[in-house]
Image (cartoon, rainbow, N blue to C red; front, side, top):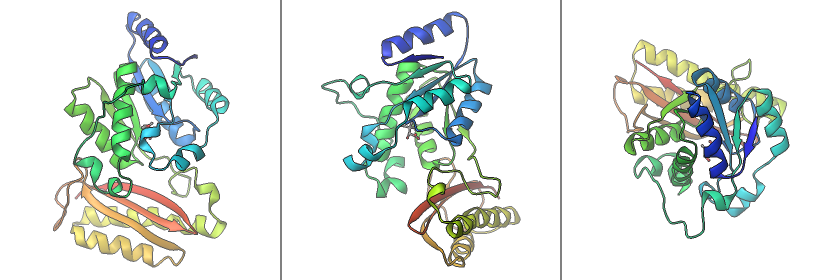
Length: 281
Ligand code: PAF
């Protein structure tokens, strides 16, 4: 596994893959890898001849400087995990390499970035699309993998890729779950045993919604079903429930006739957990 820190070195390594006629899959990350990232790597490996992973804690997607400073980092551990997973190339650029001095170009999906989670984290998705567009341009992969767990991010990146005609296939990779159904997250270890158990209400509310959707229902009934299920769990505080068009995140109401994405978040003992599901009628 080769590690590069500059765009030039990365491009030279990717050019070698290209000369050998090999396809390239990209997994952009901010490091501090867990099983969710490794599922993205596995998806990229099965879709392309070579896998490139980027590790870059992107300052432009953080609201508060304190959050950026507190972001966990462990490069040595990340590199060991990527090597064991058979990754071919890792790009770890500096902030100056990604955002050169005098930098003034941003990329933004103007509608999709400024709704839902974008309303509570202003500028977040603009930072994501700006960095992902740059990473796409550095590596020029054939496919790129992103987790479905960050559902809005995945749709924003798909829209940017389409609008800017990047010749890259965006693959959404299903959320990795604990055996009992809890979506994997680095936050799960901070839950008390009782809250960890109560957290399962997220996946059971989504299971119930999926079943109701298959039998025929309305958006309003799905809202009530999910919020009633969450409210019935005394340890859970519902923080967010959005049911929107699966591809364009548009508002939905009335009978469910097209695929809908349910984005759900709730707090358990002060720890925010998120989950999502696409349901089809
Ligand atoms: O999902 C993430 O880890 C980040 O938002 C991404 C896509 C690597 C961009 O910095």
